[in-house]
Length: 402
Image (cartoon, rainbow, N blue to C red; front, side):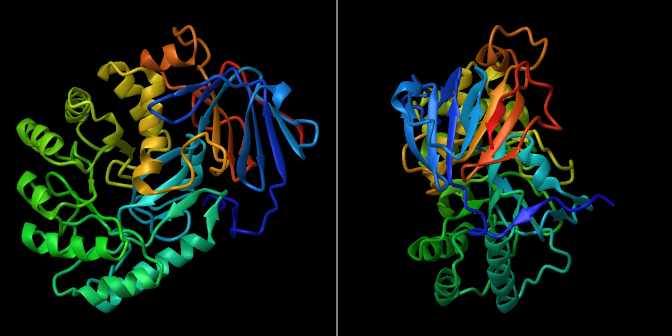
């Protein structure tokens, strides 16, 4: 059995001041300006304090200095759709350290769509509330290798009343698990509960497409539209997608988030992307893996989605990276995902893979190649260096002052 990945309790580390210098390309995560004209970034106590040229930034006073060696700096990737259970373990695949492996794929933040794989998951109202609060507390206190897991997403069941959502919100729960994975499958019933959740500041995601696990069922466009959840969960199916006309309808008749996942139908993913592009609403597109699932754990799932959507969806790579960073941060109200002063200092340093046909990282991604991860940083603290999962990067950044 593998040894557990290192973890921490938030607040136990003192990040100090970090400088990242000699950045060759800085991706902002912002669709409006995806590339920044900067080569240096400073962070203090886990937050970005300065972005600019080296001459403009006080690098000498930094406690830690990373020499990017000309590689790309990107906001840490966000996986908008995961199913955690307990710590860095998934009973779905009986695998340890899947979250740490995803960090080696550049993912620094994860959003739970429900802890649905918990053995013996309680479906009574008292039990499901207790489990959601427990998951929220556990992942707030336990961060595998620093990864931020926003968990505690109850799967709603018939019989829940408004006070149940109020209780959950007061206990710190901010997410609903996928609507449709429990006994609530009718549009009118889901709409009432989604509205109660929204009233108390709890964001909702709805299952879309055919059944994924025992107990789930078909959720078609009519249910999705009536329920009006905040996120159209895996619009390309998890795993089985809706017919094309229903996907187009959801994109055009709904203003909610369009979530595209790795564990879905790739052709349907491209249809959803093209439809959002034609509607000039790319800001609605966010990415997830929908793992762990029956198809396994996908440590490089978000990078693979970026490369697939860019290469086959005719989207510039710098825009595709926004789907996995700034778009999700804004839709999920997170303080990471964008290179902006005041934001959380969560980054991934990337370069084109060795021997890629692309002339640089953006060109290589648009050709469909995965980039190599050279370093990840969370809260201004370097967490990993050369990735054990991506193809080797052409150039690696270096810690020159630790």
